Image: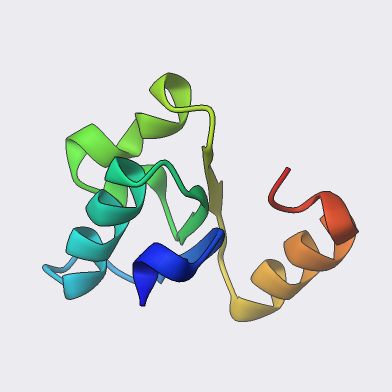
Amino acid sequence: ELKTREYMLFIYPAKVPSSVLAEIGYGIALSKQMVIFAQKKSDLPYVLSRIDNAVPSVRIYEYATFDDIIRIVDSNDTAFFD
C-alpha cells in the first residue's frame, strides 16, 4: 500500500517505539513526499530528528495539540506536500 502513495503524513505523538518509525523509514527509502508531526523534534529517534535537513522530500513540524496540526495543514493549503 505504501508504494502506491505519492504523499505520506505521520503523527508521532510521543517518544515511544512504534511501527510508524518503520513506515517512515520505508517512505524515505521510496523517496516519498513526507510530513512528520512530532510534539518535539527531540522525541524522534536521533537520525529522524534531523532527516529534514538531509532529505528535501521530508518535512517535520512540531505541535502541541491536534488543533495545531489542523492549523498547519490549513495554512499550507495545496502546497502542503510541495
